[in-house]
Image 1 (cartoon, helix red, strand yellow):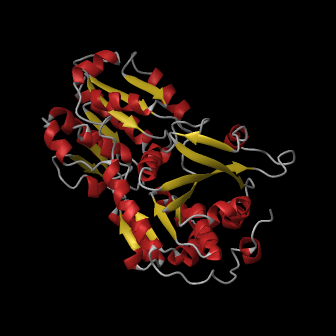
Image 2: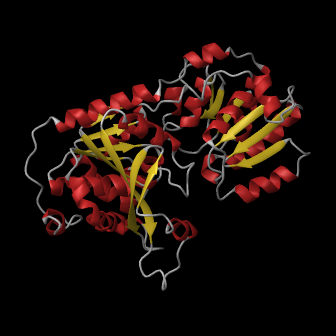
Length: 412
Protein backbone atom coordinates (compact mmCIF):
# COMPACT_ATOMS: atom_id res chain seq x y z
CA UNK A 1 0.00 0.00 0.00
CA UNK A 2 1.36 3.40 -1.02
CA UNK A 3 0.36 6.25 1.30
CA UNK A 4 0.91 9.94 0.60
CA UNK A 5 0.54 12.12 3.70
CA UNK A 6 -0.66 15.68 3.16
CA UNK A 7 0.02 17.89 6.16
CA UNK A 8 1.42 21.15 7.45
CA UNK A 9 2.29 19.71 10.88
CA UNK A 10 5.57 17.87 10.44
CA UNK A 11 9.23 18.59 11.28
CA UNK A 12 11.76 19.95 8.82
CA UNK A 13 15.45 20.77 8.99
CA UNK A 14 14.47 24.33 9.96
CA UNK A 15 11.83 23.25 12.51
CA UNK A 16 13.17 19.93 13.80
CA UNK A 17 11.06 19.98 16.98
CA UNK A 18 7.72 20.58 15.27
CA UNK A 19 4.77 18.18 15.76
CA UNK A 20 6.64 15.23 17.32
CA UNK A 21 3.34 13.37 17.80
CA UNK A 22 2.62 13.44 14.06
CA UNK A 23 6.19 12.54 13.16
CA UNK A 24 6.28 9.56 15.52
CA UNK A 25 3.02 8.04 14.31
CA UNK A 26 3.89 8.57 10.65
CA UNK A 27 7.35 7.10 11.16
CA UNK A 28 5.80 3.96 12.65
CA UNK A 29 3.21 3.87 9.88
CA UNK A 30 6.06 4.04 7.36
CA UNK A 31 7.38 0.75 8.70
CA UNK A 32 4.17 -0.91 7.51
CA UNK A 33 3.73 0.62 4.06
CA UNK A 34 5.35 2.67 1.30
CA UNK A 35 4.96 6.24 2.54
CA UNK A 36 6.02 9.78 1.75
CA UNK A 37 4.99 13.19 3.06
CA UNK A 38 3.87 16.28 1.20
CA UNK A 39 4.45 18.98 3.79
CA UNK A 40 2.81 22.34 3.21
CA UNK A 41 4.91 25.36 4.12
CA UNK A 42 3.56 28.91 3.72
CA UNK A 43 4.53 30.72 0.54
CA UNK A 44 3.54 34.35 -0.05
CA UNK A 45 3.08 35.23 -3.74
CA UNK A 46 4.25 38.69 -4.79
CA UNK A 47 6.45 38.72 -1.71
CA UNK A 48 8.07 41.95 -2.90
CA UNK A 49 4.70 43.71 -2.63
CA UNK A 50 3.23 41.98 0.42
CA UNK A 51 4.36 41.79 4.01
CA UNK A 52 5.84 38.32 4.52
CA UNK A 53 5.31 36.79 7.99
CA UNK A 54 8.61 35.83 9.68
CA UNK A 55 7.90 32.09 9.60
CA UNK A 56 7.10 32.12 5.88
CA UNK A 57 10.28 34.09 5.18
CA UNK A 58 12.36 31.62 7.19
CA UNK A 59 10.85 28.49 5.64
CA UNK A 60 11.43 29.84 2.14
CA UNK A 61 14.99 28.55 2.55
CA UNK A 62 13.84 24.90 2.64
CA UNK A 63 14.88 22.77 -0.34
CA UNK A 64 12.36 21.01 -2.57
CA UNK A 65 12.96 17.67 -0.84
CA UNK A 66 14.44 16.38 2.40
CA UNK A 67 14.65 13.17 4.33
CA UNK A 68 13.36 13.85 7.85
CA UNK A 69 13.67 11.17 10.53
CA UNK A 70 13.96 8.56 7.79
CA UNK A 71 10.88 9.79 5.88
CA UNK A 72 10.91 11.26 2.38
CA UNK A 73 9.42 14.75 2.54
CA UNK A 74 8.53 16.98 -0.40
CA UNK A 75 7.72 20.59 0.45
CA UNK A 76 4.53 22.04 -0.97
CA UNK A 77 4.76 25.80 -1.31
CA UNK A 78 1.34 26.56 0.10
CA UNK A 79 0.02 29.80 -1.35
CA UNK A 80 -0.79 32.16 1.47
CA UNK A 81 -2.05 35.73 1.28
CA UNK A 82 -1.59 37.65 4.56
CA UNK A 83 -4.75 39.12 6.10
CA UNK A 84 -7.07 37.33 3.67
CA UNK A 85 -7.56 34.44 6.07
CA UNK A 86 -9.41 31.17 5.98
CA UNK A 87 -11.98 31.88 3.29
CA UNK A 88 -9.57 31.17 0.40
CA UNK A 89 -7.33 28.68 2.18
CA UNK A 90 -8.71 25.53 0.52
CA UNK A 91 -8.57 26.69 -3.13
CA UNK A 92 -5.09 28.11 -2.54
CA UNK A 93 -4.00 24.81 -0.98
CA UNK A 94 -5.40 22.91 -3.96
CA UNK A 95 -3.54 25.16 -6.36
CA UNK A 96 -0.37 24.56 -4.37
CA UNK A 97 -0.84 20.78 -4.63
CA UNK A 98 -1.23 20.84 -8.42
CA UNK A 99 2.52 20.54 -9.18
CA UNK A 100 2.51 17.36 -7.06
CA UNK A 101 -0.59 15.71 -8.55
CA UNK A 102 1.40 12.86 -10.10
CA UNK A 103 2.60 11.86 -6.63
CA UNK A 104 -1.00 11.92 -5.47
CA UNK A 105 -2.14 9.99 -8.54
CA UNK A 106 0.40 7.24 -7.76
CA UNK A 107 -0.89 6.79 -4.20
CA UNK A 108 -3.25 4.06 -3.10
CA UNK A 109 -4.64 6.36 -0.40
CA UNK A 110 -4.17 9.94 0.78
CA UNK A 111 -3.83 10.68 4.49
CA UNK A 112 -4.32 14.28 5.60
CA UNK A 113 -3.36 15.12 9.15
CA UNK A 114 -5.13 18.41 9.93
CA UNK A 115 -8.76 19.21 9.27
CA UNK A 116 -8.52 22.60 7.56
CA UNK A 117 -7.34 23.45 5.02
CA UNK A 118 -5.18 20.31 4.62
CA UNK A 119 -7.94 17.76 5.10
CA UNK A 120 -10.48 19.59 2.95
CA UNK A 121 -8.00 20.10 0.11
CA UNK A 122 -6.88 16.47 0.26
CA UNK A 123 -10.47 15.18 0.09
CA UNK A 124 -11.23 17.31 -2.97
CA UNK A 125 -7.99 16.34 -4.71
CA UNK A 126 -8.58 12.66 -3.94
CA UNK A 127 -12.12 12.76 -5.34
CA UNK A 128 -10.90 14.44 -8.52
CA UNK A 129 -8.29 11.67 -8.92
CA UNK A 130 -10.56 8.81 -7.90
CA UNK A 131 -8.49 8.03 -4.79
CA UNK A 132 -9.61 7.24 -1.25
CA UNK A 133 -8.78 9.80 1.41
CA UNK A 134 -8.54 9.57 5.20
CA UNK A 135 -8.43 12.73 7.34
CA UNK A 136 -6.97 12.68 10.84
CA UNK A 137 -8.07 15.43 13.24
CA UNK A 138 -5.97 16.38 16.23
CA UNK A 139 -7.64 18.99 18.42
CA UNK A 140 -6.98 22.65 17.68
CA UNK A 141 -7.90 22.11 14.03
CA UNK A 142 -11.43 21.25 15.21
CA UNK A 143 -11.73 23.10 18.52
CA UNK A 144 -10.25 26.37 17.28
CA UNK A 145 -10.05 26.56 13.46
CA UNK A 146 -13.42 24.95 12.66
CA UNK A 147 -15.21 27.22 15.10
CA UNK A 148 -14.60 30.06 12.66
CA UNK A 149 -17.50 30.43 10.27
CA UNK A 150 -15.48 30.56 7.04
CA UNK A 151 -13.66 27.33 7.82
CA UNK A 152 -16.64 25.47 9.27
CA UNK A 153 -18.84 26.16 6.27
CA UNK A 154 -16.34 24.62 3.85
CA UNK A 155 -15.48 21.74 6.19
CA UNK A 156 -19.16 20.84 6.64
CA UNK A 157 -19.49 20.46 2.86
CA UNK A 158 -16.21 18.65 2.26
CA UNK A 159 -15.14 16.49 5.22
CA UNK A 160 -18.27 14.28 5.10
CA UNK A 161 -16.96 13.19 1.66
CA UNK A 162 -13.83 11.66 3.21
CA UNK A 163 -13.68 7.87 3.10
CA UNK A 164 -12.77 7.89 6.79
CA UNK A 165 -12.03 10.40 9.53
CA UNK A 166 -9.67 9.45 12.36
CA UNK A 167 -10.04 11.24 15.70
CA UNK A 168 -7.62 11.02 18.62
CA UNK A 169 -10.37 11.34 21.26
CA UNK A 170 -14.08 10.67 21.71
CA UNK A 171 -15.02 14.37 21.90
CA UNK A 172 -13.28 14.99 18.58
CA UNK A 173 -15.04 12.00 17.07
CA UNK A 174 -18.40 13.39 18.21
CA UNK A 175 -17.48 16.80 16.82
CA UNK A 176 -16.91 15.20 13.41
CA UNK A 177 -20.28 13.47 13.57
CA UNK A 178 -21.81 16.84 14.47
CA UNK A 179 -20.15 18.31 11.38
CA UNK A 180 -21.95 15.78 9.20
CA UNK A 181 -19.43 12.95 8.85
CA UNK A 182 -21.33 9.62 8.95
CA UNK A 183 -20.68 7.92 12.26
CA UNK A 184 -19.65 4.69 10.52
CA UNK A 185 -16.75 6.55 8.88
CA UNK A 186 -15.40 8.03 12.12
CA UNK A 187 -12.67 5.99 13.83
CA UNK A 188 -11.08 6.55 17.23
CA UNK A 189 -7.31 6.01 17.11
CA UNK A 190 -5.60 7.36 20.22
CA UNK A 191 -2.10 8.73 20.04
CA UNK A 192 0.73 6.78 21.60
CA UNK A 193 4.04 7.43 23.31
CA UNK A 194 7.65 6.50 22.75
CA UNK A 195 8.22 4.06 25.59
CA UNK A 196 11.97 4.17 25.07
CA UNK A 197 11.93 7.84 26.13
CA UNK A 198 8.92 8.13 28.41
CA UNK A 199 9.02 5.68 31.27
CA UNK A 200 9.50 5.99 35.05
CA UNK A 201 12.95 7.42 35.74
CA UNK A 202 15.01 7.96 38.85
CA UNK A 203 13.77 11.42 39.88
CA UNK A 204 16.84 12.29 41.98
CA UNK A 205 19.21 11.27 39.20
CA UNK A 206 17.38 13.38 36.62
CA UNK A 207 17.37 16.38 38.97
CA UNK A 208 21.10 16.19 39.48
CA UNK A 209 21.60 16.07 35.73
CA UNK A 210 19.27 19.07 35.19
CA UNK A 211 20.62 21.14 38.11
CA UNK A 212 17.41 20.96 40.14
CA UNK A 213 17.41 20.79 43.96
CA UNK A 214 16.57 17.28 45.08
CA UNK A 215 14.14 18.61 47.71
CA UNK A 216 12.28 20.86 45.23
CA UNK A 217 8.62 20.23 44.41
CA UNK A 218 8.66 20.64 40.64
CA UNK A 219 5.66 21.73 38.59
CA UNK A 220 6.34 21.23 34.88
CA UNK A 221 4.62 22.80 31.87
CA UNK A 222 5.43 21.63 28.34
CA UNK A 223 3.78 23.32 25.38
CA UNK A 224 3.41 26.53 23.42
CA UNK A 225 3.71 29.66 25.52
CA UNK A 226 0.50 31.41 24.53
CA UNK A 227 -2.64 32.61 26.31
CA UNK A 228 -4.89 29.74 25.17
CA UNK A 229 -2.53 27.25 26.79
CA UNK A 230 -3.41 28.82 30.14
CA UNK A 231 0.07 30.18 30.74
CA UNK A 232 -1.16 33.28 32.58
CA UNK A 233 -3.41 31.20 34.82
CA UNK A 234 -0.48 28.91 35.56
CA UNK A 235 1.75 31.83 36.56
CA UNK A 236 -1.02 33.24 38.76
CA UNK A 237 -1.66 29.83 40.29
CA UNK A 238 2.01 29.30 41.01
CA UNK A 239 2.07 32.35 43.26
CA UNK A 240 -0.57 30.65 45.41
CA UNK A 241 1.25 27.31 45.21
CA UNK A 242 4.54 28.83 46.31
CA UNK A 243 2.86 30.43 49.33
CA UNK A 244 1.70 27.00 50.48
CA UNK A 245 4.58 24.86 49.21
CA UNK A 246 7.79 26.90 49.78
CA UNK A 247 9.97 24.37 47.91
CA UNK A 248 7.84 24.65 44.76
CA UNK A 249 9.64 25.30 41.46
CA UNK A 250 7.94 26.01 38.13
CA UNK A 251 9.62 24.88 34.90
CA UNK A 252 8.19 25.90 31.52
CA UNK A 253 9.41 24.17 28.35
CA UNK A 254 8.34 25.72 25.04
CA UNK A 255 8.22 28.92 23.01
CA UNK A 256 5.45 31.16 21.78
CA UNK A 257 3.90 34.61 21.73
CA UNK A 258 3.80 34.75 25.54
CA UNK A 259 7.48 33.93 25.87
CA UNK A 260 8.56 37.50 26.64
CA UNK A 261 5.86 37.87 29.29
CA UNK A 262 6.81 34.54 30.89
CA UNK A 263 10.49 35.42 31.02
CA UNK A 264 9.64 38.78 32.55
CA UNK A 265 7.51 37.14 35.25
CA UNK A 266 10.23 34.56 35.86
CA UNK A 267 12.83 37.27 36.47
CA UNK A 268 10.72 38.66 39.33
CA UNK A 269 11.24 35.46 41.35
CA UNK A 270 14.45 34.44 43.12
CA UNK A 271 16.87 32.66 40.82
CA UNK A 272 15.75 29.19 39.82
CA UNK A 273 12.20 29.39 41.19
CA UNK A 274 10.57 29.93 37.77
CA UNK A 275 12.56 28.62 34.81
CA UNK A 276 11.55 29.38 31.21
CA UNK A 277 13.70 27.06 29.11
CA UNK A 278 12.34 27.62 25.60
CA UNK A 279 11.86 24.73 23.21
CA UNK A 280 13.93 21.66 24.03
CA UNK A 281 14.66 18.42 22.14
CA UNK A 282 12.25 15.56 22.74
CA UNK A 283 14.79 13.46 24.62
CA UNK A 284 15.46 16.37 26.98
CA UNK A 285 11.73 16.88 27.51
CA UNK A 286 11.61 13.26 28.68
CA UNK A 287 14.24 14.04 31.30
CA UNK A 288 12.29 17.04 32.60
CA UNK A 289 9.16 14.91 32.84
CA UNK A 290 11.14 12.32 34.77
CA UNK A 291 12.43 15.03 37.12
CA UNK A 292 9.07 16.65 37.90
CA UNK A 293 6.51 15.96 40.61
CA UNK A 294 3.50 16.98 38.53
CA UNK A 295 2.75 18.06 34.98
CA UNK A 296 0.40 21.06 34.61
CA UNK A 297 -1.55 21.73 31.43
CA UNK A 298 -4.21 24.44 31.99
CA UNK A 299 -5.26 24.84 28.32
CA UNK A 300 -8.53 26.47 27.29
CA UNK A 301 -9.03 23.89 24.49
CA UNK A 302 -7.24 20.70 23.52
CA UNK A 303 -7.53 17.49 21.56
CA UNK A 304 -5.58 14.74 23.29
CA UNK A 305 -2.29 16.44 24.17
CA UNK A 306 0.63 14.09 23.87
CA UNK A 307 2.48 15.65 26.77
CA UNK A 308 -0.25 14.34 29.11
CA UNK A 309 0.18 10.85 27.69
CA UNK A 310 3.95 11.12 28.06
CA UNK A 311 3.68 12.22 31.67
CA UNK A 312 1.44 9.26 32.53
CA UNK A 313 3.79 6.86 30.73
CA UNK A 314 6.56 8.32 32.89
CA UNK A 315 4.56 7.66 36.07
CA UNK A 316 4.00 11.35 36.80
CA UNK A 317 0.55 12.67 37.83
CA UNK A 318 -1.11 15.41 35.83
CA UNK A 319 -3.23 18.45 36.67
CA UNK A 320 -5.07 19.60 33.56
CA UNK A 321 -8.22 21.34 32.47
CA UNK A 322 -11.46 19.52 31.77
CA UNK A 323 -11.46 20.24 28.01
CA UNK A 324 -11.31 18.23 24.79
CA UNK A 325 -9.97 14.71 25.15
CA UNK A 326 -8.20 15.30 28.46
CA UNK A 327 -11.02 13.85 30.61
CA UNK A 328 -10.79 10.65 28.55
CA UNK A 329 -7.11 10.35 29.43
CA UNK A 330 -7.53 11.36 33.09
CA UNK A 331 -10.65 9.30 33.74
CA UNK A 332 -8.92 7.56 36.66
CA UNK A 333 -8.35 9.89 39.63
CA UNK A 334 -5.21 7.90 40.45
CA UNK A 335 -3.61 9.52 37.38
CA UNK A 336 -4.24 13.15 38.29
CA UNK A 337 -6.81 15.89 38.77
CA UNK A 338 -9.07 17.89 36.45
CA UNK A 339 -9.89 21.59 36.91
CA UNK A 340 -12.05 24.11 35.02
CA UNK A 341 -10.27 26.21 32.38
CA UNK A 342 -9.33 29.82 33.19
CA UNK A 343 -9.54 29.22 36.94
CA UNK A 344 -6.20 30.00 38.59
CA UNK A 345 -7.50 29.36 42.11
CA UNK A 346 -8.78 25.86 41.27
CA UNK A 347 -5.54 25.14 39.43
CA UNK A 348 -3.48 26.18 42.45
CA UNK A 349 -5.57 24.06 44.83
CA UNK A 350 -5.19 21.00 42.60
CA UNK A 351 -1.42 21.47 42.25
CA UNK A 352 -1.02 21.82 46.00
CA UNK A 353 -3.13 18.70 46.53
CA UNK A 354 -0.92 16.70 44.19
CA UNK A 355 2.30 18.06 45.69
CA UNK A 356 1.11 17.15 49.19
CA UNK A 357 -0.13 13.72 48.11
CA UNK A 358 1.51 10.36 47.47
CA UNK A 359 1.40 9.01 43.93
CA UNK A 360 2.44 5.51 42.94
CA UNK A 361 4.31 5.87 39.65
CA UNK A 362 3.44 2.32 38.61
CA UNK A 363 -0.26 2.96 39.14
CA UNK A 364 -0.03 6.26 37.23
CA UNK A 365 1.79 4.50 34.42
CA UNK A 366 -0.88 1.80 34.27
CA UNK A 367 -3.43 4.56 33.57
CA UNK A 368 -1.41 5.72 30.59
CA UNK A 369 -1.52 5.17 26.83
CA UNK A 370 -0.40 2.51 24.43
CA UNK A 371 2.70 2.71 22.24
CA UNK A 372 3.14 4.45 18.89
CA UNK A 373 3.56 1.00 17.34
CA UNK A 374 0.02 0.07 18.42
CA UNK A 375 -1.36 3.48 17.44
CA UNK A 376 0.18 3.28 13.96
CA UNK A 377 -1.12 -0.27 13.53
CA UNK A 378 -4.68 0.93 14.22
CA UNK A 379 -4.28 3.78 11.72
CA UNK A 380 -2.89 1.35 9.16
CA UNK A 381 -6.02 -0.80 9.53
CA UNK A 382 -8.22 2.20 8.70
CA UNK A 383 -6.12 3.03 5.62
CA UNK A 384 -6.18 -0.56 4.40
CA UNK A 385 -9.93 -0.79 4.84
CA UNK A 386 -10.66 2.24 2.64
CA UNK A 387 -8.33 1.02 -0.13
CA UNK A 388 -10.28 -2.26 -0.30
CA UNK A 389 -13.61 -0.60 -0.98
CA UNK A 390 -14.83 -0.37 -4.61
CA UNK A 391 -14.13 3.05 -6.08
CA UNK A 392 -16.38 5.10 -8.33
CA UNK A 393 -15.10 7.38 -11.07
CA UNK A 394 -13.49 10.70 -10.10
CA UNK A 395 -16.07 13.13 -8.74
CA UNK A 396 -17.68 15.83 -10.79
CA UNK A 397 -16.80 19.50 -10.59
CA UNK A 398 -17.27 21.43 -7.37
CA UNK A 399 -16.70 25.09 -6.69
CA UNK A 400 -13.72 24.40 -4.40
CA UNK A 401 -11.87 21.99 -6.74
CA UNK A 402 -11.35 22.95 -10.41
CA UNK A 403 -11.59 19.47 -12.02
CA UNK A 404 -9.91 20.22 -15.33
CA UNK A 405 -6.54 20.91 -13.72
CA UNK A 406 -6.75 17.82 -11.53
CA UNK A 407 -7.97 15.41 -14.20
CA UNK A 408 -5.51 16.30 -16.94
CA UNK A 409 -2.38 14.13 -16.72
CA UNK A 410 0.85 16.07 -16.43
CA UNK A 411 2.74 16.43 -19.71
CA UNK A 412 6.05 14.64 -19.99
